[in-house]
Amino acid sequence: MTLAFGAVTVVDSHTEGEPTRVVVTGGPDLGSGDLRARADRLVNDFDSFRSGVICEPRGSDVVVGALLCKPVDDSSAAGVIFFNDVGLLGMCGHGTIGLVTTLAHLGRIGPGHHRIETPVGTVSAELHSDGKVSVANVPSYRYQASVPVDVPGYGVLVGDIAWAGNWFFLVGEHPFSVDIANRRQLVAAATATRLALIRQQITGENSGVIDHIEFFAAPQTSRGSSRNFVLCPGASFDRSPCGTGTSAKMACLFAEGKLEPGELWVQEGILGTSFDARIASAANGRIHPVITGRAWITAESTLRFDPADPFAGGIVFP
Ligand code: PYC
Image: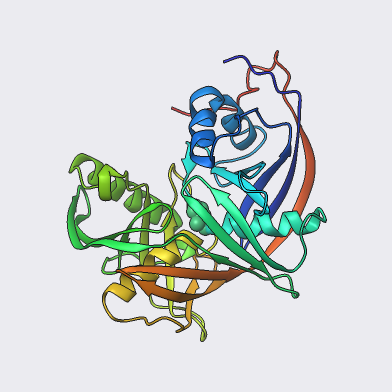
């Protein structure tokens, strides 16, 4: 498509280390359908907008984009479509914390509860008076337990498949050191696992593509319940403990009878930062997870797209 974008204003933040870029103005016209329909339109008609905002030279593969949209329901604070360097995300926990912090920074919301529409359902977020944000994610569940996958070069890994706004493969038993110094090996092993799942046609419900891989290990802080490493769609890993990944983990713990509603779960990420998480309630095998964390504003900028720029749509690596 032809890039018609001139100036796009964005606010950047990071949530426990993981960046979010909220597109405030200058996004494409996606119509007035629900967020699912608008997300489809973004992918089908404006993919170079997504890649131009997120990929190099304006961004990087670590950044998650959040396109701020007018909500369908006027009582919602916002609609949002999350995306990264390779495509769309259904939901994004750290990104919702970044979005709420950004809306507060812009003076659009204050402390209290706010509804946010996403392509996978409406979530709610509470902005606390100390600046922390709690996100009540979409209902989450373990779909399958103890699924073996033969990963070339690594052997058989056994993991659970869970939905939490994205599809996850969660591996507790593995030979890897979940330590930031080992990040290249973790990315390689998780990427090989994701490819093996695809090759062996192991999916989420209704053929949902499992695009997030999580490895778990013992916590390294006195408050922590567990430490994780999360490979995102593409080749980057979550610097935060991953809000949807933490929700998926709690869904699996609940299914095993190891975590009850109300109990605190402190999920450390690969940088040692953490989310405080709880199951608010559960019914019919689904949990309602709540994740609490902090975000900090890092930049307010205007992105420029010159139609003559060969990389106006970003550098898209094969
Ligand atoms: O926090 O849910 C999350 C997330 C997904 C991908 C990156 N962060």
